[in-house]
Amino acid sequence: MMRLLIFALLFVLQCTTIGFHENSVRSSMDFGVQQEFKVCTYKEEGIDEEEISSLFQYWNEELSWYSLKAIHVDKGYLERPGFTGFDILNYLYTLPLTEGCDRILYLKGRQWKDILYEFFTLGIFAGIGIKLEMQGAVETNTNTRGYIKAKYISTLQILFTSPKSTLVHEGYHLLGCGHQLFMQECYEDIQKVKSAAKYTQGDQNFFPSKTKSGNVFKNRFQVNQVFGMSSETNP
Ligand SMILES: [Zn+2]
Picture 1 (cartoon, rainbow, N blue to C red):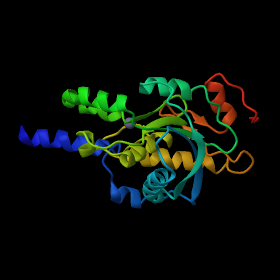
Picture 2: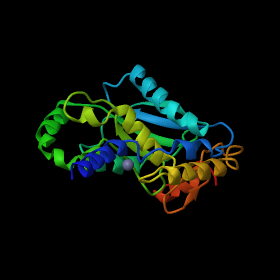
Picture 3: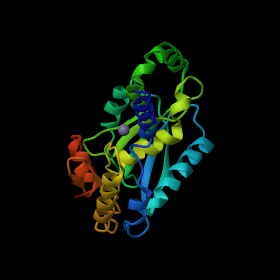
Picture 4: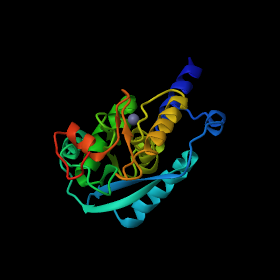
């Protein structure tokens, strides 16, 4: 019983990085040439340049396994569009992907209301699985946009997760990965996105996205259409 509990706990911990890594599988896979994708961020007041660059540096260490690099494009400050993650995602649905952006990421800060909320939800420790996912989310219609809680300190959460590990987690979703116990499936998802990118890097200069259901978006127009927007970028 105890063993099972430890395993369950370990699983929850590991889950902050989306699944168990399989180093030998990964190193035997071919991820092709080095590619870059541009992540446009909107940030809440209180998050500084240094914090963002250290977040991206950490993420890029992980991405180097796949010969990938996330390029940070700062789109400035944006007041949080609502208190809950749903509010933030709903707002992100209204933003078109524009030239120079392959993904959109909202960096949520930490206000006194959050601290209060964290205090009152500490009791829901048993529901940690749910709580963890609330550190960030990526929409599953196109896997091009999401948010992370970019700033948090104290409370029990720090024992389990951090803005850096949240970015890595949501970063995998931005590459088309879902959740899995073992990572091989996700490695294969990344291979698929990278191989689709071979055909979109030229004219459109767009890094494609992929959903778990197998839809591949090869240009910004296709992505924007899903959210009911027309875009200046032609198909
Ligand atoms: Zn997730």
